[in-house]
Amino acid sequence: MGQIRIMPEALANQIAAGEVVERPASVVKELVENAIDAGSQMIQVELKEAGIQAIRVTDDGLGMSEEDLQMAFQPHATSKIYDVHDLFNIHTLGFRGEALASIGSVAKVTLTSKRSADETSHYIVVEGSTITDQGKAAARPGTSILVESLFYNTPARLKHLKSLRTELRHSIQFVQNIALGYPHIRFILKNDGETIFQTAGRGDLRQAIANVYQPAIARDLLAIQGEDNDFRIEGFISPATLTRTSKQYIHLMINHRPVRHYGLNETLIRAYGRQLMTGRYPIAVIDINLDARLLDVNVHPTKQTVRLSKEEELADLIKQAVIDALEVSNPVPSVEVED
Ligand code: ADP
Ligand code: MG
Image (cartoon, rainbow, N blue to C red):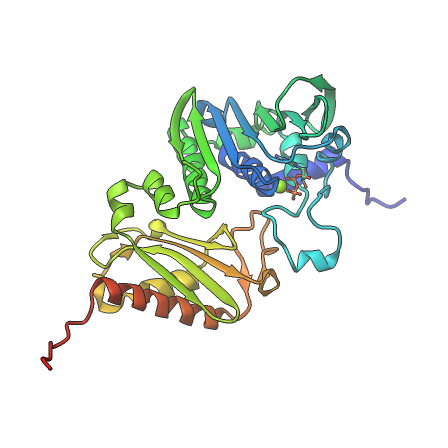
């Protein structure tokens, strides 16, 4: 008899969870991305003890049907892509259908949801990939997901968590970063009942930057923009006089998705030329809009790394936009000629 067997679903889910659910901030990321994909205008994240005790994400998005509540926790269950063509034309933050299955395998999850046309809302409780309760509830349209006892059945992960401060910092960083990509969504982040970050959600990027950094910094930033046949970029960069010692103040978004892209970061920095002192880096929030078919986000489960077609063309566009913006702020002195 052969030795190979297909593993039980709960085990497969836990293995998948190993890739995407590293810490409370990873749960926050997946749940907030789902809320954004559901078209929410307001997303509230409430943590208890930095999310180690509990994480609740509440949105005012589309909501889910009773049927979908159960489906959502199945591995590879998604409403976002249906065939392989969709995979190369992604317009949502999620598409892998893994997050809820993964989170449900390493925590106790209570999901309550209502579509605006439904009479009541429904809830479902999933613990270690098993549905332990479900029923009707009274709630407003939208979705609320409560995640408790994270990593209760994966002690090694639990042990790896850092101090409450560090875990909280990861969640704050994630919410701030994504808020810069979606200035028209109102984000609220609370820990132990205290509001630690929020945005107005009025669609004003400079305002969102003011919420993340200080208003004085947001005020001094320079608008940048650029466009060609394939790309449209817009956002803000700091003048060469306003710099930081770390590159972490550079926020690049591709179609609103915060991404890490070493090459484009370097392009941006180099565009300042000699205006930047060694070891100093600009503050920047730049959204790059492109045809989703030029982008491959299916590189890593967390989707922060992407592959781009026509990267050189984009780099040139960014470089020129930065040069233009800096020139407007600091024009080359011209000699006045009288006529
Ligand atoms: P993915 O986001 O990759 O589709 P998830 O496991 O994160 O996979 O979610 C599974 C499905 O559950 C989503 O495709 C969506 O249909 C539904 N869903 C999850 N969260 C929400 C939400 N906040 N509002 C509405 N639907 C949601
Ligand atoms: Mg998702």
